[in-house]
Amino acid sequence: MELAPWAPNPNAPTTETMSPLLLATWSINHPALTAAWPALSTGGTAVDAVESAIRFAESDPRNATVGVGGSPDRDGTVSLDAAIMLSPSRTGAVGSVRRALHPITVARCVMERTPHYLLAGEAADQFAIEQGLETGELLTESSRRRWQEWRASNSITRPIANIEEQNHDTIGVLAIDSNGTLAAGCSTSGLAWKLPGRVGDSPIIGQGLYADPSVGACVCTGHGELAAGICASFLAVETLRHGNSPTDAVRQVLSRIKENYQLTDQDQIGLIVLSHIGHFSTGSLRPGYTTAVRTADRDEAIEPELVLL
Ligand code: GLY
Image 1 (cartoon, rainbow, N blue to C red):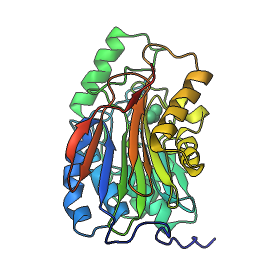
Image 2 (image 1 turned 180 degrees about the horizontal axis):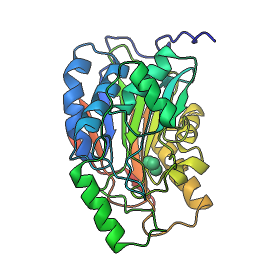
Image 3 (image 1 turned 60 degrees about the vertical axis):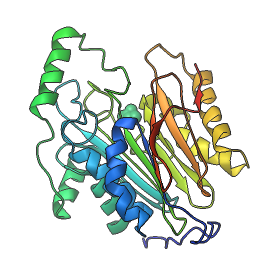
């Protein structure tokens, strides 16, 4: 199968009017945007910016839910999910990799070098090795210690952890470059103490992320099972497609989750919705979620525009 050609967004404003923009789930990921901003702000591409911001988070062993040092599963193994998306025909993802140090780059290689969109498990790690990408030990002393503490203090049948700033779950990044091109990406070790083999929303197109160059893009963070059942990111972009605002799209996603799930006090979803002309909104089911923003004029972390509960 030949990869469909991907063209710049025909509806994007001209280069004279489009300002680059970078957004990430959780203020703790602000340094990742700082790392990616210099290239994006001087003509770099949105896809490079998304990859580079996420690689920064994946490399940081202090980031306890992404990449090296991510949260282990029930049995003490770290497994990672990631995806990148430019358009419906330009997507790549990996699920449940246990050795790749930069799953976002493996996902990009799946998108750019294979006719597929998703590789999973041991074969995805093998693909990373074949592509010459870095592999290594994902479990750090700190993540092992956290897992041992959880084992000592919790029922083994309870894999869900609180989603909050210090245990923030997925990095999702949205970018627009000076050509008006959109890109979305996400990377995560998934829910702490998950069952081995569990794959969340992050590597699934339409759930953890979605991007359509003529409409907009979305990324989600939080309990992936909630984003999965309603195809949260696809729903957000489809809501934009029907002429609604990013705030309307955030409200639609959160309301749809509330309608369909018996939510507990710990359940959380946060999301960012970005239109193709650079308007965005953020929201979450509960307080505590934050978004990092980087533009020519803004360099800050913001509270959600909408908190449903
Ligand atoms: N949102 C990430 C996960 O549930 O795995």
